[in-house]
Structures are given as structure tokens and as C-alpha cells.
Amino acid sequence: MSNALAQELDRALQREFAFRREGEWYRKGKCPECHKKELYVHAEKPFVLKCGRLNRCGYEKSVKSYFPEIFDDWSKRFKATEADPNAAADAFLQHGRKLDLTGMRGCYSQEYYKDPERNIGTATVRFPLPGGTWWERLIDQPGRFEMKARFQPKRAAGGKSYKGYCWAPPALTIEKQAAAERVLAGGMKIMNARGAASILMDVHTGEVISMVSLPNFDPNDRPAPPTSGFDPSVSPLFNRAVQGLYELGSTFKIFAVAQAMNLGLVTPETIIDTRGPIRWGKFRISDFHNYGNELSVTKIIEKSSNIGTARLAQQIGAERQKQFLASLGFFEPTPFEVVESAGAQPLLPKNWSELSTMTISYGHGLSASPLHLAAAYATVANGGHYVSPTILKKEGVQHGPQVMSEQASRDSRIMLRR
Image 1 (cartoon, one colour):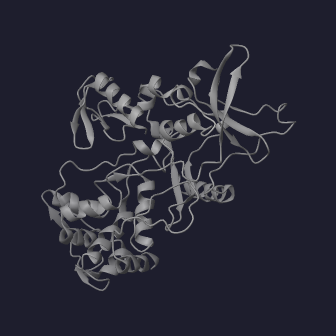
Image 2 (image 1 turned 180 degrees about the vertical axis):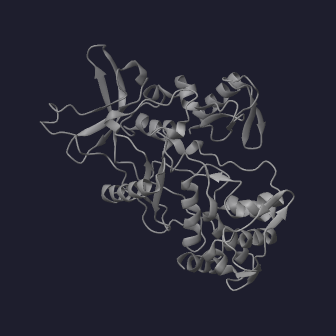
């Protein structure tokens, strides 16, 4: 976000809600829905306003939609020049839609649309379609028009039709996306599930090759947004892969094992006491089956032992567990070129007790999105480097910080394949 835009937005947030700065967050703002001082938003990345009273209020709204006057006049704020003809289009995509333009430049152009009946116009962001036509998004106060986007009229396209075509970022291929949708839909039907999500990602570059959220919808027949009091996750508009926050269960166990090996606490052959149940106050941790009195670390993953994973978490401790999970990206929304990703703030325990440490090690007590999980698994699989998910085509390895040793990563991969 540009400095001028960020400063203006910051002033608007303080004027409207009187937030109190607490670290990286603005808190104690007055909620527009319940009027309690429970509203919060990230101070540096103010994308989504949320009420902390999740069960009693649940207010949530994007900052962009709350302050449309700040975001809706792109061509006036960012004037196109001969040297920068796409200035407003770039600003809209980068600041309004939260997209990383690296690799996208050259895939779109800034154009102009004029409504002949109303004699009003707007800058547009135009994307070419494979069939020789185009689709464009109206960006200057789009609420003035009967539509926010439009396809090239068939007459102007020389008879060519947009039907059957769509624009895809360079990293995505329609064939792989369609195949993933078919496979996931089959599994969803077999399990009689209400929804499903999948992500196919290159562990070395972060390229998201396929992302599916079911049920989906036809963009040409977009369903109405869910009304107040309606569970938004039931709507086809809800992106389960990016927005959905879930306790991800046994998929988390490899993180505890990888960290324990990385710290030198265990090796794949180390024997762990798995006698149970583990009692912590009134709570009990047990396994689905009785796996005996002890298991090797490798067998803990093979058998998916809650007790064994919890024992490793006790050795690691709460503080080191928090640091490790934070380095895997589980404490913040995952940066991604899809606007709804900014609101996927993981749900963390307020009191990270020893019980939390144990239950989180096997995926209960912390809620995150499938996109968080994909990025973390990429770290485990690629030699221990964090890699940021992206829809853009990347050339060569894009490894980020080293989170775990190559040896811990290699041993974890072997366990996951068994």
C-alpha cells in the first residue's frame, strides 16, 4: 500500500473507531454491530475489521468496503502517464485487491469504458481471454454503473465469443485445475461432506498449480452473498482453501516430530513412552487404538499416535513450539494474491498452557487455513525452507528462511511416505 494511501486509511480508522495500538494490532475499537469495544484490525495490514465477540456478534467486514471513498477513485489518485500508462490499474490490483504484481505485469492493460446513456466513464483493468476476446473490471466508483465488469461485446469482437474461456494467472493451468476439481468432487460425494478444499503447490517455488474449494459456482451466475445471521461458510462464495479456519487434526503431527528432530531431542528410531491415557486435570489424551507401551518416532507418524505426539510436545515446550509454528506461518494470514487471504487470521489459544502444547501438536486448539497447511508442508518437503504461496509463475527456487535442518526435513519426508 502506498504511503499516502496508508496514512489516509490510518486516519480514517482512528476517526471512525478510536482504536488502541497493541503491538501489530489495533484493538478496543467500537464494533458497528454490537457497539462493544471489541473491534480489531491489523495495524500494518488493515484488510479486515473483526469483532472479538465471535459467538455473540461475529461482525466482519473488509476495510475496503467500509471506506469505499478511499479506494474507489483510482484514476484520480493514480494518474496514467506516457511512462506509466497502467498506473491506476496497477494501484487497483495492488492496493484494492491486495495482489502481488510480480510476474503479472504485461498480462493486463488499463483501458477506459464510457456508458453512452449516462455519459459517465471509468478506467478499467482489461485481461485478454484465450479466444481472442477480453474481460475488464470497472474500477472508478463502479457502484455508479449497472455492472462492475464486462466482456467484450460480440459485435465488437468480430463475432468471437468469450464463452468457454477464462483468464488464468501464468502459474495456473486449466487442465490441472479441472482434474483436481473432478477428483475432489468425487471424494466429497463419497464422504457425504458439506464442503471440500485442495491445494496443489510446488514446494520449491511456492506456485499454486491448483486450488479448489467446493461447492463452487458459475461466475456468470454468481449467487447472492449470505445474509446477516447466515453461516458464510455454507455459501459457495466462501473460499474454503483460503478463508476456512479449521483444527487440522493429525496433519499437524509431522510438525512436532520435525521440530523434535531439528532440536536434537529425538531421532527417527528414538523410543517414546505411549502408555495412556495422559491425564491433565480433568482432560485425557488417548489414542484411537492401543498401540502398546512404546513406539519409535517413525511409528508415531505411521500409527498417528496422539499420545506419542503429545509426549514429544512436552519435551519441546510451549515457547519453542510457538516459535516454530510462527516460523511456519501459523500466526499470521498467509500472504497470497487472492483478496480473501488477508482475513484468514489463525485462531490461537489465549492461554498457551502445557495442555494446549500437547493438543496443538496433534492439530487441536489452533485453527488455520488449508493454505497455511500447504505452505508449512512445503517447508517440511523442500529441505526446511519456508516458501510463500503464489499464483504467479516463478523461475527457479524461491526458498525463504531456513526453518529446520535438511536432515530433519529429509527424515520427515521419509516418514510421510511410509
